[in-house]
Length: 177
Image (cartoon, rainbow, N blue to C red):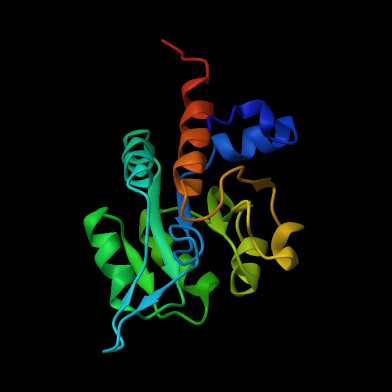
C-alpha cells in the first residue's frame, strides 16, 4: 500500500520528517512480525520482507543515514542487518544513549532523527527523537508517543512504507538552482 505525505497529521509533521538526517529502527516487531521460530536445538529464526531492503537503499540514496537499535542479542538480528548493509547496535539496555553515541561522530542530533518502534522498551527513544513513529500493530502503550503510525504492520513492509514516505517527502522539496 502506498502512503502519501498527506497522511501525516500536520504540516509540522511533514517538515520534521523531511528534515530527518537519520532513520533509526527497532528490529523485532518492526522488521519482523514479532514471531519467532525456535528449533529443537534452540536456534531462532524470524521472517522479514525483502521489500524493506529496497526502501532502505532508496533512503540512503536520499542522504539519510540508517541504523538498527535493538535490545535483542540474537545473532539473527546482526545477520539480517549485515545482509541489508545496515549498521546495528544490539543488546543495548539504553537505546537513547546508544543512539546518541552512534549519531555523535556523524554530527547528527537526536532531534534530527526518526525512530520506528513497536513496544514499551522503545518508549524512551520514542520520547527522545525528533520524529517518533510506530508500526500499525504497535503496543497500545506507545501509540500516543508517535507522530506517525504506519498503515502496514511490522514484518509486512512497515519499514518500506516509512522509508518511502521520507523519500517521497524529500523528493517533493523545491530545488534551487
